Length: 400
View 1 (cartoon, rainbow, N blue to C red):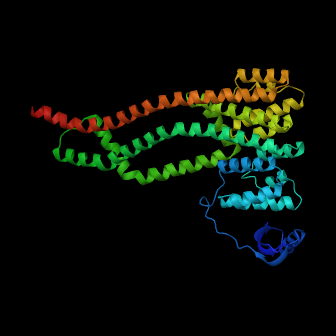
View 2: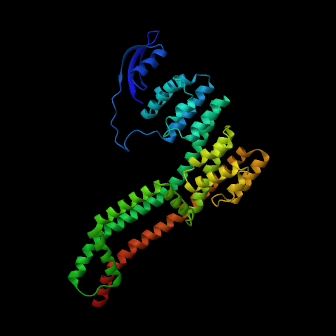
View 3: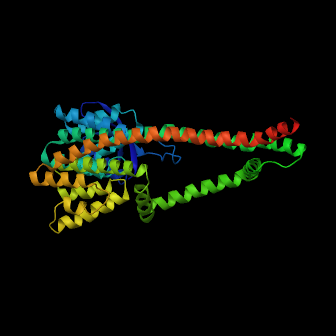
């Protein structure tokens, strides 16, 4: 909806300068009059020019801080609108501050807090809004918000562990590619020119390296174009449902990364579903939200299939056990949780266990990748050096 800047005066004489969302300027005036404001001036806010990828963003950390602070204020007895006003004014993230102001306006206009949040799906996902709705219905919004913040912090921690494990190997790989490309484009041609002046037959390894150097030197721009095109097409394909399902299925079968991906997926699934159930969200709705926020197409497909089975009268554990992405230990523990009536507690225990499993797997993967990449770098650079010095050794032996 259009945004209007306004300046008004309260009954107490306080000057208010803010912005408001409305269908048109008349609707904006009507909203302000309902707030009992004397409008001094009001005009449509000019559109901001935002370059894609360079505009302000709301991070997960921003949302966690917002959630924690809101929970504390509500627990202290402050009205929701006042809480939102305070948070909007003190937020350092301009986009989040603007979003909170819009949410406050929606709440003042008669929307529930959860409905107001649903208007901003890029910041507040289905998991967040449904848990807030459950908190509003149950009258425990502060408890739900604290639970949400704890869930998001654990999810961020899990994601950070996996990303940090990939930093060092990625740096080594980039360095290896840059060093090898530099040798091929700048160093090898110098040796090739020297060997050409010397004449004589060159060893096969030297000829191979010189041929690869010619390819790098003459076709680098084509190689860059091909790499960019492949990356672009891969990303386009991965954005499709079929492409995502195909690639996610392949990643689960990778020899080292596959088991780690399964553990991360199971940890996220159990943590999300456990948090939703303990917050009072119905099991079918909880599974639907978990599927949509899984971030892995194989898990999403498996959970959606499970929903269909539950509607037919089956338990959660039985249909889940048919899918290989869920280990037998997980389905057996879920079955025990269902039988004892403590499914949410059991799911959180599984999530805690798999968080530890992810830690162990990440450490093992890192300890395996680091020496492997160093060996690769040593062989690549060492092989090039030896290949280029072979003719010199051969000439030295001939002179001797």
